[in-house]
Image (cartoon, rainbow, N blue to C red):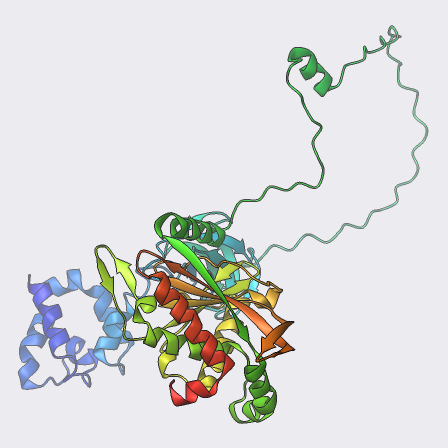
Length: 453
């Protein structure tokens, strides 16, 4: 009990007595009157049995604040400084699978260099080295399921502590030995009977056919490869199937004349890029149009939660991005408070992070409405599926020139089909059609966005 009381006293007086070095306690130095009782406790013989390592730390760090020296002894409790462990991956990601081990024992690593990659349900997370040195050992292998804090490898710190990898011995010089004298011929074994001619063994498939004549065995085809599904692909498949099983999915279609939006982009794209440092695309126009339509029809921005409906007074737009590893959906937060330039910059940043694998869980969390652009791949028309737990998704498609009737004339215009898939449990057909009509009106006449019409 006395030792615990001493520790509490030292911590309580640390800030005010940081100037006191360890010699004040160990060598009888001058101690303020208000700390005389602390000195008396330090001189007690029972302290020598319990707190020797703390006192050694204090004496070795004479000029350091007492709280700094005190905490130094506990740095290695959770592992050495060279331990490479799995980082925290997010509240909704309890574990992951090691997708790749990028370093092997003996490899040199720098601080913050990637040692392994972990694949989760949503993103790929890098495991980085906390120190510079050489890989001493790798304690995990590809395919292992790991949790935050799991040790993946150990790094021998610095050159001195680096593991000495035994180099292969130099090749020995082969000395040309003098040609030996011909030895006496070895005794030959007694002659054996000539081997019998082996009987012809029928092929395996012929034997199986003879055993089960009713079963047809086709020869294996070449070019097939079986690989396990990635965690991301499994998660996408599960969520899409849950969406199909849970929601009452229905899709409505319309088409948009892109003439005015394309003319605006052609006229101002150079000035826009010069001022804002980012290209002006069509996605920002659709995001702004969707935000306006969501504010006009709040049920499309709502969600069912049990027996309740949650209406949101904010708009976070999810943008579906296809990557080499699968589909990810980063979120433009506060899209209802952004202008064209801010939206384009955010889309550009999130797109780069998605493609280089640096996107995080926080970048994809939330979202009240999703926009998917299948037109970049040449899709003419499709029925997108809702991204749970949202209630609707807007699908954009490729722009094609088609003949349309304007007044009494038939003219050629750049047209785009758009689709809205919605949860019919919450959104009626009237709201869905009006929403898509509102998006069409604002994209066809971008001045409506400026005038809030």
